[in-house]
Image (cartoon, rainbow, N blue to C red):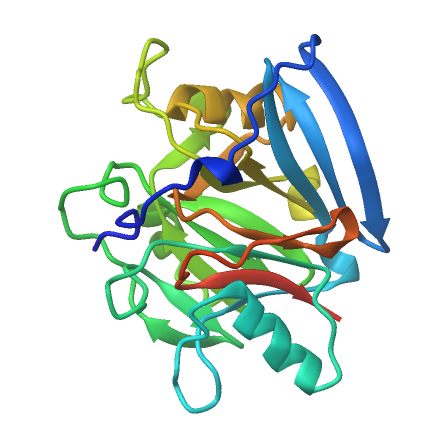
Length: 255
């Protein structure tokens, strides 16, 4: 498992301080999907807010032949070939070199991979990790073992790690003074699961900085780290559709 094996090109990173702790620009929406560039504590992020009950929010990994999509653009083109549109998509969890998911994966209520509870190296195994799930017009972020105890199969789910927030508490291993900075993306849920909020940093941030974005700005009690460095988003309403890095699981809105 190592999805962060690619070079980060400096041209993809925006780093200007806009002079305010919190601002918003380039706000755009397509119905129940609203994406914007927002600044929190001097760092710019792409934020997409999804009204879960009003869209088809799904997890996808491979086409009907079993071939991983591999890139957001491949998934978008496949949907468009079937007369669908994709107002939002983001890489949705860590993967192996063959693009297979490291952890739990459910598509259309079909469990394609069991939850991964084994110990190991890397961010995925920085416990507690968690599962992002969608079912019945609601979404959630749950700690992995707590999710498994419920023993309920959602319509869609993907596992990643570490948890950024659990009940408003930052992951115990994150440090305020960390010097490890990467482009990062993640997801949080609020309003009783009715709103899912996806974030991608436009310049490298620490885990602590990224977690406090969800806690203090997006105000999601639970949030999950999806990946770093390869972090990619398809948000055509703000003119962004990343193409550079391979991805494994994908979280997307399909209309």
